Image 1: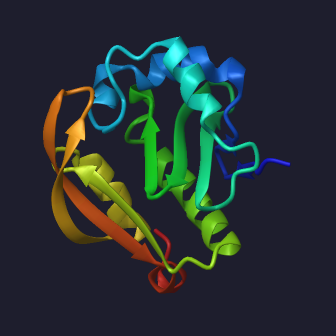
Image 2: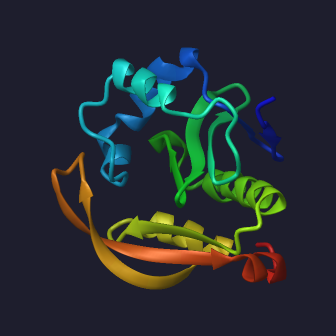
Length: 174
């Protein structure tokens, strides 16, 4: 059985094949894709279908992807841990706390099912909203690097962050 997480406002579940069109439309918005390293532009429904085929049938905590649904609005983003915590949200849903809420649920789920002591993440240096989400979650800057952005077709300065299990369970939730 695939995991489903529920928060106060959101439902996080496994992606389904019938999500491909809305997924492609939302992640393929240039304002969204520019902050996601592997997402090319344009992003097609077929690309979404092919990406969904790469997801494991029985994901574990170190390789899980959840689409995020807002009741009455449908799919508004995604959160996953595949080598690192990653997330995106559709532009109309920015600035409403959904990323922090969804990531909190996934991090709780991850640490409850894994013995891993640290989660990595990061953000492009020109994405202060994502940096703020990570700060609120307790991630700290551990380095800087450059990453290739498919959407921008260039290298982009990137902030590398990490969150330890100890910091997560010792935090005061905001």
